[in-house]
Image 1 (spheres, rainbow, N blue to C red):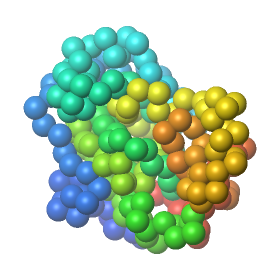
Image 2 (image 1 turned 180 degrees about the horizontal axis):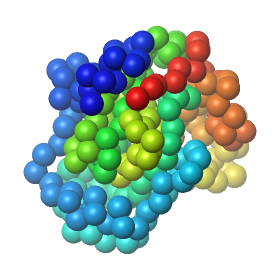
Image 3 (image 1 turned 135 degrees about the horizontal axis):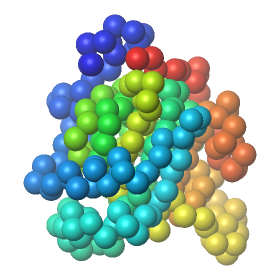
Length: 226
């Protein structure tokens, strides 16, 4: 699969097992995700178009592995477990959180990644990103300094991704929080879109722009092929 992805794309696609991934995150071992992967296949859809994102699914969170992840991988910090399923093929933008994100690959997918320290004046160029292939059955941790967004599919059937984050991430800001954000003189405040979610959108990514995301991704909104 990795060989084919490199043959059909004009950007290099690396594996998350490549040493180049080390500054973005790590491959996580020691947690049996098989029950969670099977639950996803039985209970969650892949939409015909676009993506579906659920920040917190109580049934998924009820599986034993997430209690272990919360206790050990997150050091007792409360987490949420949900999923992102879809058919995305384009970069679209970047987001980051303050706290690591875990991605459990139910299917193969690709991730477009960059670093927060590459942001300049609330912008970053698509050419600053690297693309990584995540094979099905792999659990990865993305560090809080890693820019990322939705996975990109590697086949016609789309992708399925378990997403674990600190509890409350990617939920709406309160009116008071929005007022404080809008009054804040810190340039980073312009990127805050939801709780613990800072976003730089490509100007052509209408779903993000309609939410009020900052148009901070410069260059062509590249499409990844498979």
